Image 1 (cartoon, rainbow, N blue to C red):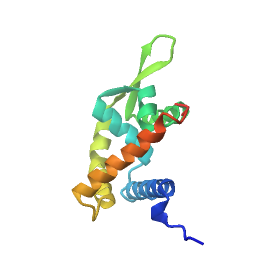
Image 2: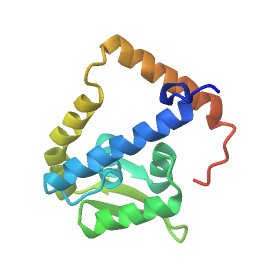
Image 3: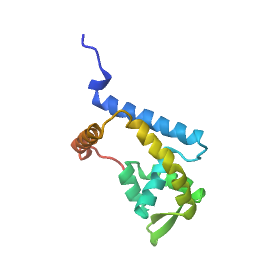
Image 4: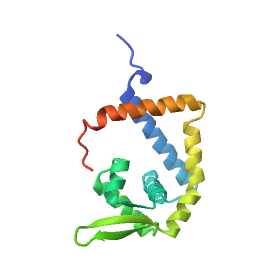
Length: 151
């Protein structure tokens, strides 16, 4: 009987790596007193980077369903880190913008996020990282159009 190796099971490898990376982010943010989850930070970072985004764009970028994105935005809005601007009357289409407080929180958290990225890439050369990211992109592209996501 052939042994099952973690390294030979691409789906398991990708999934488990994502789980421990998220756990590291949660742990790091918590230990440093940040009251934001990695998912909330991701949205905050995206809105900071893009200036403004529609909720649907956030869902498409993060591959999270609209309900999940709405909950994240509501929490960030309650913390006064983002604000929603109604775009089309009566159609419940909102642009999400970062507030000054949100920009400050994101800027305060950015060194921790960068540190996490360094931990994840420790011992990996620039060439290996590029190959890995290119390979993951190919895997993603192979399956993305075959999957019907409810975004």
